[in-house]
Length: 83
Image (cartoon, rainbow, N blue to C red):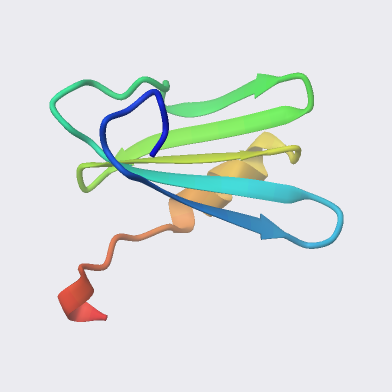
C-alpha cells in the first residue's frame, strides 16, 4: 500500500548492476491519475507514466527518458485466467 492511493500497488525493481528501475502498477479508481502522462525529468531521475486498461503504469529510474518510456510501453496487461 502506498500513502498516496487507496488502491494496492504492484511494485518491482529491474536492475543490471549499474542502474535500477522501479515499476509501479496501480489500478485506477474513480480519481484521476496523480502523475502526468509521458516522460518527466528531475535531475538524473526519469519518470514515465501512462494509463492502460484502467491501470496507471509508472516507471522511474536514473536512466535516460527513452529507456523508462520503452519499458512502460512494453508492459501489457494479461488477466489471470489467460496466464
